[in-house]
Amino acid sequence: MPLLKKKAFPLLEPPKDLDPNELVYQVRFTKEIFRDYQIYLNRINLYRQRIWTCKVSGKGNLTYEEALVSEKHATKKVPEIPKELMAMALCTIQFSMLSLKDLADKIAAKLQETLFIGAVLHGNRKKSGLCPCKILKVLEEGTVKTKYEVAWLDRNKKVIETAIVNRNDLIWKKSPFSRNSLKPFIRKSTYRSFPWVLHDKLAEKYQISRDPPQDLEGKVFIQDGIVYNKRKKDAMDVEESGKLKKKKVEGEEAEATGKNNQQKEEPIKYPIDDLLVQPGTDDPVFKARPLPSRDFKVPMDCVGDLLMVWDFCSSYCKLLHLLPFSLEDFENAICHKGSNVTLIVETHSSLLRLLKHDKDEYFSAVQKRTRALKV
Image (tube, rainbow, N blue to C red):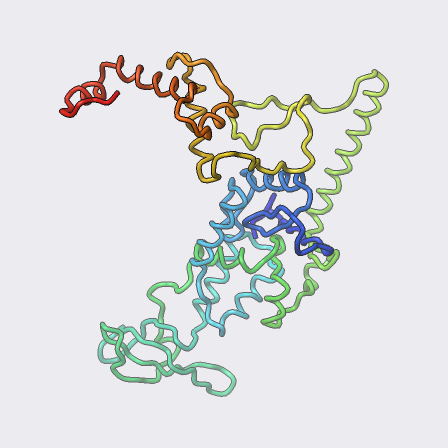
């Protein structure tokens, strides 16, 4: 889910009393449903602003839809941590106050120290020195796991033989999980940072406590089931109270001097996207989205061609030496059953006259034709 100002943005629930035959407006990529067209436009304009952040990769300055695509690609790069190590990694993340970089380093170090079944690494083979191997089984001696059954591998990753080795004889030539690969995993597993807090379903699945530890007493607090950083919350409250106090003083001053305290809007820099143009004060207010007109005499599949030809003739009427004519007149002339239609004849004559006097490649091509011209 893309982030807005580093916080999760909740999507709107569909109306409960929605009729199956009711006409509504739906956002394509969030599936949100709106009855009011203006509210739908406001939400679309919010999603099109470059204020969103990809939760998995941390990339910002994106639109909502771009952030969704970024999350989809970034999720594919999240490392698949074995089930045996998943609980340990998530326990390290839960309620950690470390930065993202330090937390990723800490998890990478822990995962590198812990060996698991299926891990491919290098072992000290007495005859051949360091050789690639794969852990088949973890052997226990008392309460401490110290020995491992491994399969020695050749260049083609085929098993040569099996052996039992000590932990000290097994080493990683390359860390299985790097810091950069674990960062998306941390972001994907949590819904907030400082402290990092796991998603409730993920914590419940791996039986990880959702109550803050005792060493965080006074640093965090829980409100409505969400863990907050007390220091950040206090700073936000102070900032908010300062803003409210400042607004109150400005309101009193404006009332005393007879001036309104509305902030001046920043001037819009053109050109901008058509969808970002705000309506003017004199523009009519459209409460409902107008339906497209279907009142044409020509077939619906020909309406596009009709509009294109009429727009061309209207735009270049001076060059073609044509008097302007309405779309309705042009449509009536097209649909007239008779052959002698003045508007159509004059339009064809103007176009042919222009081509004849053009003296360009088209006219020279017409002159080279061998058959007699009918026009």
